[in-house]
Length: 74
Image 1: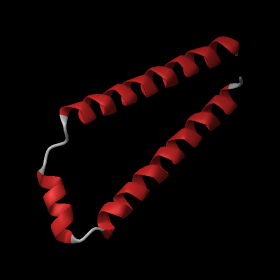
Image 2: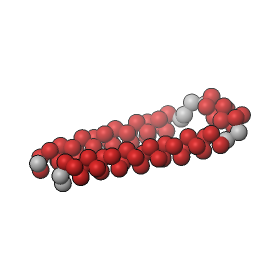
Image 3: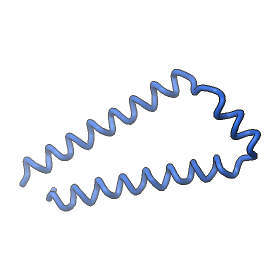
């Protein structure tokens, strides 16, 4: 894998995550204000927070590993 294709893959993943985030924000924005405010006042369950942190950490490790692999092939 060349550095350019690795960079392109990373950019593609960032764009995909940004699109997903905008979809979520759009869905929240469409909710009636009373529903949105009541949802925001409740903390997320600990299991959800732990899962999210785990996924983000795994993603960062994967990106670092990919970057390391691409640097080894150049």
